[in-house]
Image (cartoon, rainbow, N blue to C red; front, side, top):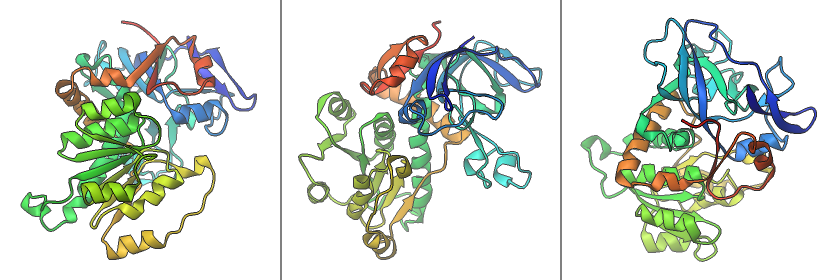
Length: 368
């Protein structure tokens, strides 16, 4: 079968003929791949800056954002049937018996750090015509989400952050009363990529007043944000301190930029009792220095919390699927606008070599 793979030793990216998947255990499921989205991490792997193949392979099949259709199930599989749509999670457990998190089916909290990630770290991804996986790591998707189900994984990143936020905000004395106390519902989203826009949708449906703060022109991203009822603020036109003066205290910041120095410095403008949700990994962009004095002052004197959410769990994927349905009903057609282009699997290798275009690019591996 066809697959798109990167060869780190050769510094090569090309189509390969990979072996067909097969049921090897009672809990296995074979999936026909429909759509695969790609993001900045995929581009970094494709440019040989990160990523690692399985130990027994010279190449790594790309793709960790996928939607597929079940074609075969093992004898022990009950909750998934042939014909069902599914999305796979990315992280898989380590092999250490002493890792309590992985033994409990929660590799998002792996204690050893020896987990694998499909399409990223020591496990093949989903940019192939078919793949096989354990049913535990597959989440069913309603048929009505066929065209947008590929957005589940990036939304799951935001869902993980928001779940952490909700846990933390239970510390507020008025939370036990079921009240907001006039606070806790003003958010700034840093960045305007797919995770940022999907995170904005998730915050808006939870009652937050959201401003997206980003560099660049207004264009389609600004129009999309405003169609949700969110503000779009260009960093070139307004500083964060001015935004705070105009709109009031910022209760939540959701960082979705890849943790740039500017995004981290924005913590200075987080309000009292505020929560900063960090989703990016600054190390991929090179080292930089940052004065941590105001961060420590804010955390201690202003009761602020900074969280780097864990990798999405199966629960986060289920929340994302549920919210995709909610978004589709609240904003008909909006999710489809996030998918800027679709291409065939034959066109994918060349697309990885080009700069990102639009919001979310998707490889349509198979058609219904």
